[in-house]
Image (cartoon, rainbow, N blue to C red; front, side, top):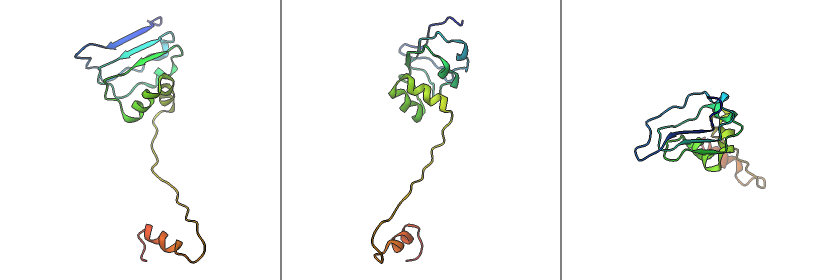
Length: 118
């Protein structure tokens, strides 16, 4: 099993009801191609990132999570990077710097943005 070069798990008109891929890829170092077309896969196991010879990954027609789908659009190396990063929690915050001359209303604007009384 460690000499497996091609893994095709989903193909055809009706696809494959496969939803989860087991985390067993650490022993498959010669694997070159994975085809998971038309499955029900949303995530990939982190061990897939350890496959050094992986050159082609086909995940079309799968309900991938948005982050994995974005990585898939960029290629195999981006998917490996995504899997190595683990679970990433997005941080929705930003910084605002208000620059102007003095006495023109910067503090009033900041208070209004923070729902403080004007």
